[in-house]
Image (tube, rainbow, N blue to C red; front, side, top):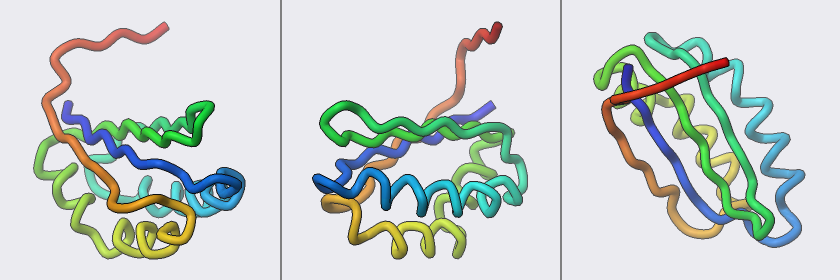
Length: 97
């Protein structure tokens, strides 16, 4: 399993607008090959973190370059500060309930 972590800062007063854009985008993300799961959070000061799980590194990298993700980033640009930061890596341990 492979992980993509995306982080950014949501502009003040834009959490609700960003959340709507994100929720509208989730069905698009789910259609990408190798998609396993996605979790997103907004911290108390508007810090945004998304953790996305993929079958392979190739699946995660293809998603990161996909037209769907590029559209999401364009749609969200007015709600976010600066450029989305992304980190990729192999999942080396996990546990679920």
